[in-house]
Length: 69
Image (cartoon, rainbow, N blue to C red; front, side):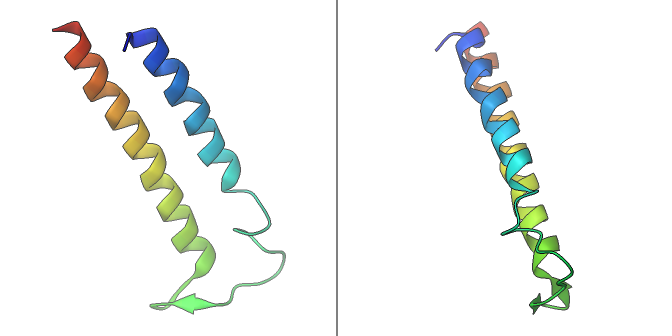
């Protein structure tokens, strides 16, 4: 896969996960419950989405380096 194609896939995925963080399903209005291990669900959802963004970008960097070799 060419580097430009790889980054054209990684960028929309990153933007999708970023937009997903602001949906009402993730951040309900004036609700801090339910709690999971003492932290609100919104915090857990934000951490999971951050990990997804991180994984997409790491995969893109690793695959683009393999393409250069």
